[in-house]
Amino acid sequence: MAATRRPTLADVAREVGVSAKTVSRVLNEDGPSSPQTRERVLAAVAKLGFQPNLMARNIRVGGPDTTIGLIVPDLGNPFFGTVAGGIEDAVRDRGLTLLMGSSAEDPDRERTLIQTFLARRVSMLMVVPAFGADHSYLKAQRAAGLPVVFLDRPGVGLSADCVVSSNRAGAQEGVAHLVERGHRRIGFVGDLPVKLYTRRERLAGYRAALEEAGIAYDRALVTGAHDQGTAAAGTTRLLALPEPPTALFAANNIVALGVVAELARTGRRDIALVSFDDLPLAEVLEPALTVVAQNPAELGTTAAATALTRLDGDRTRARTVTIPTRLVARGSGELPVPEGAPAG
Image 1 (spheres, helix red, strand yellow):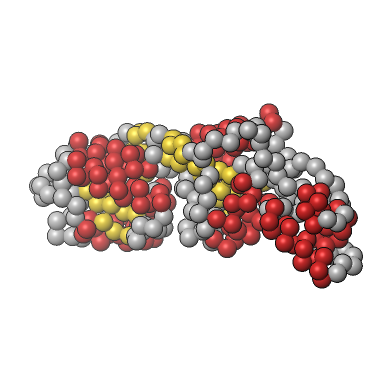
Image 2: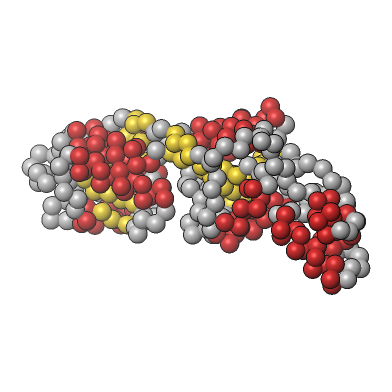
């Protein structure tokens, strides 16, 4: 089956039965047009899923621009910087340039950025979805052949390719590592309520490891944290319990920073710790931090490779690719159960 091409200005003109110049005048608001013509042009634009090219405000009819649109939640997070580097490595030989924007986890801001990228007629679109975003409005562009790939988290309302880390399996491996060292009271420090896909999967992995070891899930050992401050406070609360945990699992690297800081502040070097996600300088901590490491560069290269196959005409069903994590044992996750600690 021939690949479906993206609609052009000429397609809109043909649909309405007017000239391309008339369509351009309506869309750019740079000349007179009747209300009836304007209404018909806009209806055709919506029907065909056409996106005006902001890079060429004349009536040029051509292919998409040689750029890729990437939207991430936080440009300052090194994880997403490495993802972007992986994408650039994969597309450099194709002469494509990466454009980036930050949604700040705001669905409305994400949608505005996407519309901006579409107006620039990017060759492909990659999105780390903001929580609460609905991507059904991209169906027309997706059907018209625009490669859309969701990264790190699945999208909502749109059947599109997705590349994620093995969040559940990785968390399960990290907690099982603590169990193997004899720990049975293992605290979880992470986002609550667990609405975001990655956090939900990691909590599920934590619970799966406990269940596999025959350890009852204890809600008192789970504390909510979304940044360093709340992670430190949560760590304090857990360690103040009548039967405190002997080990902790931090659900992401930002939370892990708060846990590490609180353990250092209180001089608690007897609490085992495993973090999901690696940290800069994790090896120089005392003890060095054991982590479940993701591979953000591979996330990026895999997403780019997937999008390129779509760009080259692959029209098979949307697929999800899972990138494995790996446990990096450095010391903090290998601490034994302190003498005299409750058995759990």
